[in-house]
Length: 274
Image (tube, rainbow, N blue to C red):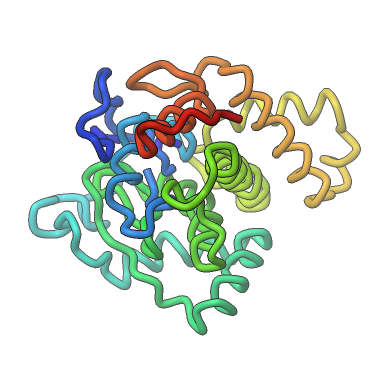
């Protein structure tokens, strides 16, 4: 969840330092996956400093002719990502069967793949059926981020997004974390299949080491279903233990605790706890 930029809770700014600039995302995952209006929860997630989506392996910039020259006019915040740039980010996913499976599921729910894609100045994230791409990121970083964000988009379209208003505390935290973990795992598999150069998902190298050490046969056999299941287990453990890089950047909290506290603030006076 990395998904950049400050975030605001429904009650005002969350204490703590602002997250580092790209390539880390707010969370991605900053995404609008809780309140149906998308706003307050998205801001909350951005402030948490979502590290989940991507980080640069090498420092690189797209060449000027790729559209990164004048950000004020060529990549306006809130503006629709042009078709040619959208193609640069999404077309390579044809080489990742896992990403294609998710896109097929999205098409089945929407009837098409014409979901909005817009420019952001605060990380790459999903919000209420739209994917926002950080306008300062390289194409390689954006491809990796989209590998992750497609899962959040599908969750939203399927009606399974966490809802801080209607869910119990336990159900809300579980839904938030399950979706984030699923996005990591599917993103890892898509990245393994695609092999994007110049960027990689958060924790990807460490997971590869874990996979080689614990189930090298799954890797040799390219057993993607098993690899994705192993990835979910591994990523969940990172979030549960609060390993370095898997805690909020503004409050340095375990994400389970962070989302539980968010629910508490949204339900003042509630004394029941899981």
